[in-house]
Length: 167
Image 1 (cartoon, rainbow, N blue to C red):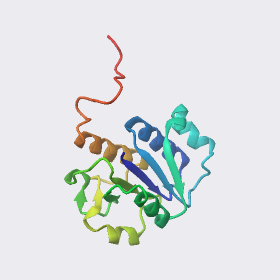
Image 2 (image 1 turned 60 degrees about the horizontal axis):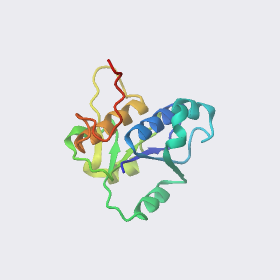
Image 3 (image 1 turned 30 degrees about the vertical axis):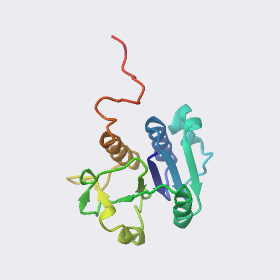
Image 4 (image 1 turned 90 degrees about the vertical axis):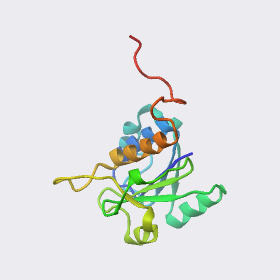
């Protein structure tokens, strides 16, 4: 199962949208405290719509707690850290189903300590022009669906419900 980590997210609506994406792709959502909202926040649940009850999610107190929880499952996992300052593009990476995709807060991104330790696992989504960054929920969706495409679930949609309207 793909793991999506939000490191100290600040905006409930973004987290709710990301939760909905996680339900759609069968990923687990991890939230690393401190959070900029309460997990029972109206806006969080509103953005997640009625899908929140289907979401596999967990809140951890800090980075060390996250690493310990993921290590407890005994799956080999690669951690990838997303930042606009990375040299490598996310499309230059081969993702695996148990990977951990780590995204920072909306205002500060990921802390330098995590990015320094990330090395070549720091990745970026290309942006151009005057845009400083992408919306967090959009960034997560871009990378998560690329990972699914690499797993072979992209073109045919195999394993996913056909939601196209019947003609």
